[in-house]
Image (cartoon, rainbow over all chains, first blue to last red; front, side, top):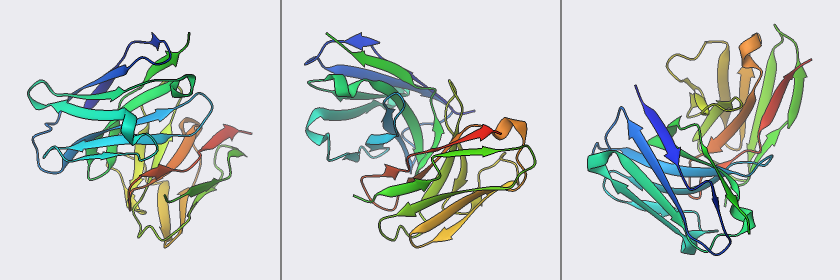
Length: 117
Length: 107
């Protein structure tokens, strides 16, 4: 059974760095073709793809945020991470991680992050 | 970037109805189109992958079709558990992009 669970700080202030963790089970990021991606959804708005990381450490970022994003993984501990630097109120959203087996199949329930002074 | 225009944004229907939801891409996405269902507080669930392939465990009343720039999700006979939000995702090219979503409500 594949499960993913996101965790994050809940609330942070503008200009801080947002650190998110995706802890998963039921698959390994050392398996050929596997990956984890991050997606976000501001309240009442659509979904925005942020970044992907694959089993071979290949990474793709959304160009609209590329300079602020860093995705990484810890294969041994079944975790993936996303950092977003210099956050602003526009980064307030629910953040999801999802397994990639060529494309997103299983998703986590999401974690809400609020950026507020 | 490929823009995905999803329609309608809202849809009111009754149990037993046949409904269709559309996604139009700004360029050819070569059938690399997935459909997902999202219920409040739950993880999104994949229904269809690569246009017309039913995810394991998803009822056969869900189906997908399309090619080129135009894609459709059809629910043949709505069940009470189908009232949710649906969205499409293109993964033909980066950045992957989503449709705006369709909220399916009980009439």
